Length: 119
Image 1 (tube, rainbow, N blue to C red):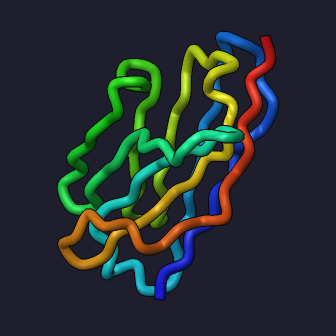
Image 2: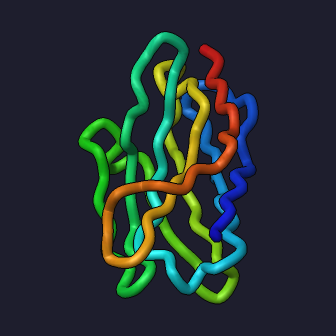
């Protein structure tokens, strides 16, 4: 099994930056892709970005393209989300999720980390 733990959330002012981290442990050799999602109060889960462990291909939601950057460190089994130019609409709980094998179906989720952007 694979476990994911997010960290790096917190309170930041408008225009600020944060870097979220997602640590994978367990059977990490089975990981295919890891993505970042968020959920704001009263809203649906929103896809933000994903990265393929082998090769590093990335994909972003239009809403964060140019502001957020996903990256990974294969040796440390870590995935990061660098978030710049944050605004209050980015306030949400941020989750990392993983898919296994060759699937892009995210079946493993972390517990989430809160990001709050003050105006």
